[in-house]
Image 1 (tube, rainbow, N blue to C red):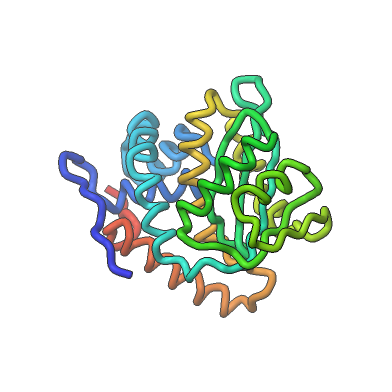
Image 2 (cartoon, helix red, strand yellow; image 1 turned 90 degrees about the vertical axis):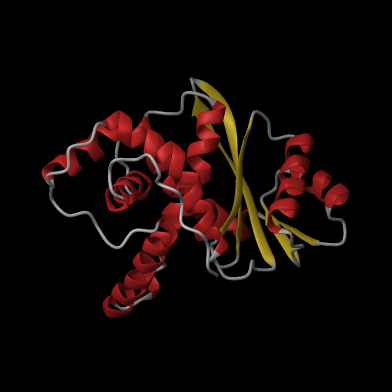
Length: 239
């Protein structure tokens, strides 16, 4: 699927530098200052505040472009929720992935009751424009109550052991949460995790199922897709 590259009008740094900084931040558990240091080692002088603005401006755009290039959404959805700390308060991160591990959507909410589950299911249907054959959840009763209202014709399987796909999908988020020492606000968490869930999985193929040559070939393809969606010709060179 072809898409128009983001506009970099008004930016004095080349697209290769901007996209590389955004890639570093969302792919690895790095702070903005650490990205600044890595770029300085390569001879590119850019402030951490500039990196922050780039990630805020382009992160979601890149993530959306990568999602548009994903294969057709699977018909088996795994839903799960996990608590996160936002400014010292407990919030819940709701996540849905399909049977292939593709992240369908995430949503930060303050509760995990029926209303929260219903809101997430309706958001999923709207964003994916698809109806699954089956949804798989843990034993949280909120899912069953919301399922009967929003998608009663869809099969619902509720079992703790069946939902490892969604639970495993939370692991990179946990890693970033620790590196960032939590999130400052629910809005900031939603913005970061929405972009993160679109960019990070693109560079995390199921390596344990690939030989080394196959993994390198797959990553070459994925880097080429990244360059296409960002409009970059390649990695930045030392200034």
